[in-house]
Length: 294
Length: 296
Image (cartoon, rainbow over all chains, first blue to last red):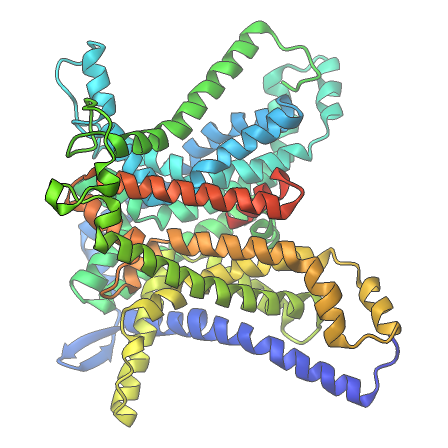
């Protein structure tokens, strides 16, 4: 462009201000200030009606009460398990889409993988409820086949929760895996093969190092979504779900103990952030790149 | 092993088996939901009692209130549509403004701002919900104690639901529009400007037509993300429940095939949205895939 005159410069400044306003409003009013308020809530304690004092009591309660930190640890472990399982289920299909199937078969398979995620999570959970509950499709089928004498309750187990979580998370793993595997040059694999490398060696030395960014992106996103999930553990796990988001909901909405709920919220946020940071550190990636890819 | 290398028979068989199992895993839950919407029984469970449309058209006189007579369900669908329309409008406008801001301007703090814009995606939805809930009720308290104002819209309700969903859907819209704007050839605009077109005319006739697919795509994804949202919505909902929250409540009370009927309706609506996106995208499947992937 030509040398900007004074007027054009002023116009450009105005445009910048106009474009900055919605961005700043959005980020300050809906992200930054609400979290500041949440932090303030979590660091105070009610000492008399309508009177509060700064305190660490909410966090102390969390560590003093085995039920609370027990659920926290359980949620973290189950989320990690669900993430690992999602990776195991998604990797072969991503490999088939990226490397084995060709042309239309490959795009068709990819689209098929995406379809369930156009449907609400509520609907997906309903499907699993109908399949797994005691009077449901699978227990009935098991009786018909003579595998069990009476219908067994397949809901409310840890395994049920894990299956539901893996199902809900698949897309977020398949997409980054496919895009990172597609960028792997086939001739590298052919070369390794011609030089006598076997499948496992190729996988370990060529494929996984190349796909590492995709694997990390997928794992970070899946872990985070699983940790923050409410619907699937709650519906498929029933009373046994013991998911940390349920504690937050109880404190906030049922008991109206916002101070405690805010502290729980921050603990969950801290865990989620720590895992994201750890994932980035391990794979040596930048946050911005990972999020773009996801 | 890749297609160009010899694959032993057992590997082919294992691949086929795995794919079969995977697709079964993927689709059986959805198929089951659809099938039991037509079962002539009060519970969505086997055995099969024959085909019926009661769960769609049944009325109270028949003892079965179908989807189209269930005013509570229909009302919640409408609530979801209204919420999603607001979220979509806001997100696409703010997302487009953000895309121009980040792709066309340089200013101090830009790096920080670009990271901040991504942050909503890594905050669990439940926490977005409670933080906005806490902040808005603090604002309402302040307005009340300072000026005696009763700001009802800051209490849990649809306004907060819209704000809560918008807080992270805006990030997705920003990413989608930015990705396309980044690939735009600026010389087209410069040529038009050199030929005497005004800035407004250039935007209207060159830049926006180029951005159209991204705008349509991000609108569709925003609508879908809002319509399907549960976590954030649950924390902010007031008396009018959007569809996902109402369905959740009913699922906890007990199963009824009406829920299957409404689910089938949702599946068809999503499929329709996906198909029209593919047609709008012209490049067919590829772009829709990208759009859906961006939703991740």
